[in-house]
Image 1: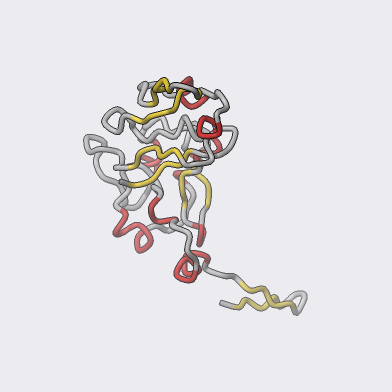
Image 2: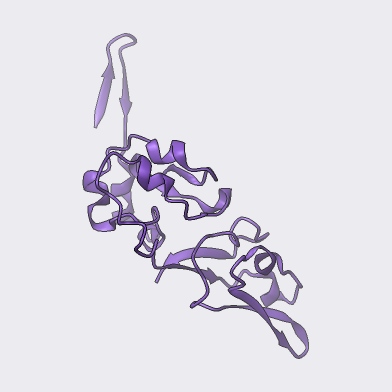
Length: 170
């Protein structure tokens, strides 16, 4: 889409970044957009009004590709307060009685423990104690995630010094 500015005679190109995903190898869709959102209808019904962004008490919802709101765990964790859903004027969200999402934490190979450096920041920030450390002979304790206990809140993401933890849809 090209917009022509009549005042200054300049053209501005706006790119719908969500379509760029088709040409990249990044897997943005394997990460949750918002809790309780109806993913199949999200891009069709979301008007990008920003009400969910304004109402998020932890300020983790930000405009993502194409201007659609997305959770960014680098800014904090989701408290599952449901305020984003209550603020939305569109029928985009499931009832609060449903699970927020099927997303869980995943620890990548860049974790310090895999390099024999002791770090337990993710476990210290995990309120449901889903991240535990298994002792290993001759090396530091290795983190393990109990998927049944993990809520996908993202508290472990922003505290990781190597960005080795991501929240992915399972």
